[in-house]
Amino acid sequence: MSGLQRKDLLDIQSLSTEEILLICNSAKYFKALFTRSIKTVPILRGKTVCLLFYEPSTRTRISFELAAKRLSADLINIAVQTSSVVKGESLIDTVHTLEAYKADFIVMRHAASLAPHFLSRNIKSSVINAGDGNHAHPTQALLDAYSLIEKRGDIEGLHIGIVGDILHSRVARSNMEIFKRLGARVSLIGPPTLVPDEFTMYAVDIYYDLNAILPQLDVVYMLRIQRERQQGSFFPSIHEYHKRFALTNERLKRCKNNVIVMHPGPINRGIEIDDEVADSPYSIINEQVTNGVAVRMAIFYLLAGGAPLDEKEVE
Image (cartoon, rainbow, N blue to C red; front, side):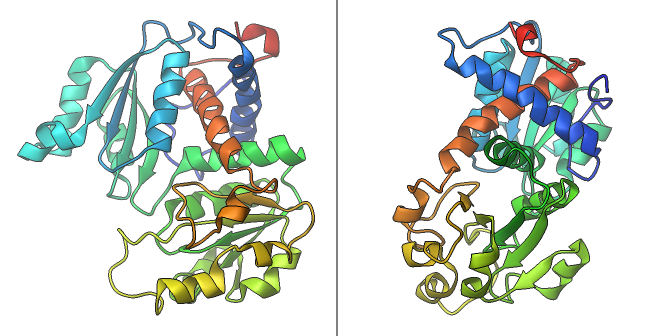
């Protein structure tokens, strides 16, 4: 294929399998830049990237910022907490302001599901969804898929368990879609309050006993408890949750000897995952962070009209 035939990247559902693999394949060439003394290339010179984050972020925001800078783009970093939004400016008025800046890309995170979709319909710039409510986090899913492909060569046939607060997780929803699309079996594990039966519509398996399913998993993908999105009590206590669903060193011993441990961050150590596991040789959590920059560089490049790459072309 010739490249991404689209203006925006809003969710995994709208991407073809070929486009997913194109992004992952392109990312490996951008990652090769990271070992060079000069890590920047002029691919987006003269282009402007605007980061518009309505929710807190460390990894995603910095990853997009570094990706844009390494492609030589100009960067506008809007801190919503100190912008006119706090004075009551509406999203559509913010859109008009961004139009005036002539931004080529807008990377948006918002608490409202589908806010990036609204933005994309009302602006000529390319819009990249950096997370919207509990709906989608497509670039996280893409970097996770790339990380597994890099580690295992292929995702097809892997049994991937996503553990924790599925109900409030945009990462879980995007990852379910991309992992299944690439041929994996996906199981969701957690308390019934956080993994309700409605998730069977995604054609995944649901388990409420982590100990029972762990020996079958090739990948254990841990999620944090999103207390900022929860209204009400979903389990008796943090202690009880840790006792039943945390990936501890003892539970790690139940896993396959080549198991892969993943987490999108931020990690709540001692709640959903223990230090010994997060820092173990089985964990690729830090590799996910590194790969996030390469994947987001690939997304910028392809949305800008870039063609499929070979290594000598990334100069």
